[in-house]
Image (cartoon, rainbow over all chains, first blue to last red; front, side):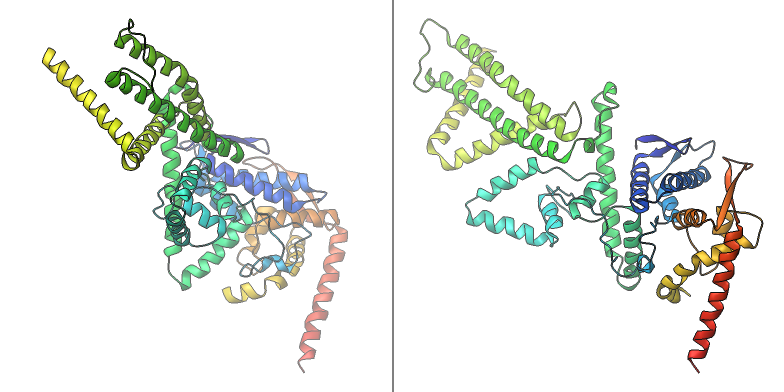
Length: 374
Length: 109
């Protein structure tokens, strides 16, 4: 499923798939930049738009009203790069060699990239950012994790939250610091085609796989969006939120997950302490208040304290994923943190182990009591 | 001649203006589609992205001019024709081209 964008090309309206629209917009931006201070810029842009509109019409019929991404790619390839007069010299034509002038490049940014069997995409993103092989980054994480006693594991964990996922082609380009515009893509395609002939097709296949995967991911996002509620149909796609906002949303999501998890752990500790010892950290509830009432009050207090934090957590995740209704991700993150903390406590602290065992005994006794009653 | 294509790109590029003026001079008026189609099988094959800026430059230099002509399908199109100044320029180019080729032939002797 693909969102459709309606555009106005020199007075005619056309419907394009979103990636087709992105490609066209990037082409026109590039064209305007190349034309620079050309006195006839506006007219040339209009001519180009008209030419693209004509080509779009050729791909449409009464039974087909939307121009697809592949069709747009073909159209823009037919159009060819727009050449400004300043750079209309011979140097432009050296398609095989690196361009002499510095081409426009997107700001290089750290993204997570799901590629080549990546689990969280952190390493792949770092490798793309640094321009090295992903294996080195993975080795770095493992070795540094061993030497710092797991501290870098924490950094890694934070990065999973704070580093946005590259989901659009532009974001992927930014992740690699590689150019994404019609001229450069065509140049690169030509170079790749040359290499394709002499070496193997592995890089192409990898590229294609990555594209396909990112499409699928986007599709899944959309499907989830639809499922989340028909009223949210027009919810903003993930990439409408800026990089910095997503980074902060990720950090907040992490912090609030920690807080809600800590509250849940505190609640569980208090709950089982009262059940087993009748006291919480040395505090004994008044004897005239029955235990069940203390537990109910405790549960209400927990709900009251934790609800604003979980609301903030939900908002952060929603900002992160670009959807209002973020599914169960936030709850699962909290549970995961609780389980991890539990496992660590069980492994490293005798007291915690004793406490957890005690909790187990309480539950077991309760279940035995319950079944003996029934 | 794909190999020659790569190497002589700069040469062709410089002569594209010459080629367009020559093509336009051969008929009363030419539409961009005609120009592209006519050049496609030649070494001067080009694309809209190159042609529109070049035509606009030629028009600014008053070598060509255009008229809007209603087309059967779609919006009106621009039809280009050579101006008097353009024919003068073409004459200069032809003369200079002859001078260049004869110079090159004589250099080898």
